[in-house]
Image 1: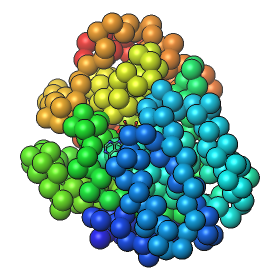
Image 2 (image 1 turned 90 degrees about the vertical axis):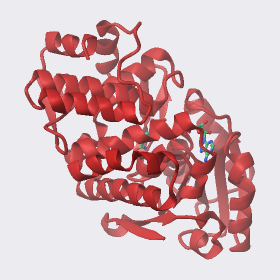
Image 3 (image 1 turned 135 degrees about the horizontal axis):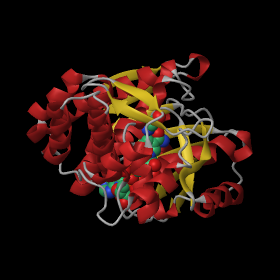
Length: 359
Ligand code: NAD
Ligand code: GLY
């Protein structure tokens, strides 16, 4: 088992990465202070893992209640969130309860937001079960639900007490969802670590066949980068913004298509190609680097172009409510070569139009 730490003074917490963690009662109860647990999952993940997690927590002496939400990004909203509060109150959970998220990024983001505001904040544990949530969303404390007018617009920064990454969960993940997670994995290579970017290409077949040692090493690298970035800039006043590479364009795609039509990771992949095209037009990456970025997404079965039917104007409309807008100005994360990225403002609309229409 690998152990990393997110260093945030008194709110620091461990990330455990390994196999069969969900059966380890001592480990899974280690960061739960009280006796009561509200386990949050959905109707796809619960038939696979709920009984196992209940048994593990129960044998550690915890009393476990459950809230099973409907599956999918389309349900990541305030109405569904309220179901968690209904269950917490109906089952008389007090301030000493712990909320445990068992699922992908949708469950993690909603359970985390519920934990941040139930009785003004209760303990929170992440058990991410998708690749995307294991390499990104379970670490760093961003929690949220969507609004019809914008993705993740209602939420809070709220760090978990611990993150348990059991790679065995990936054995049941559909291939399309695994590919979507790879978009965030590739992101770390582009913004932070060229050596890792090259490693991904070399190891693509071991990654795709879910070789355990390769997966653990890959997830550990991603979580180490994320832990480092979050420790430096928890609330995204600086370097953390780089983790949003491709997300400004990607969120526009997700919102325009309707939540859940394009997977988050798919939208991030196409969004990153548009960001890379913009960087190429500005001279921040060369033609070979642009082609390389496109080809690595293709290698991992991800889309490299925006939806055909989505015009430039639709991007502009959605991007105007992006969380990175400051003083009314759009800010974009662009690759600077491969292995570095920067926040760039003041990009002319005609250049954005060219990048969006010709990537
Ligand atoms: P998801 O949570 O919708 O999971 C994808 C699908 O896989 C769902 O149908 C889910 O039920 C199913 N599933 C989950 N685990 C499974 C398993 N082990 N076996 C079989 N099926 C399984 O999507 P996601 O890609 O995990 O997360 C996307 C969400 O994460 C988006 O809402 C995005 O905004 C959010 N996100 C948040 C952050 C953050 O920092 N908080 C970062 C990136 C993305
Ligand atoms: N996924 C972007 C972040 O956590 O900041």
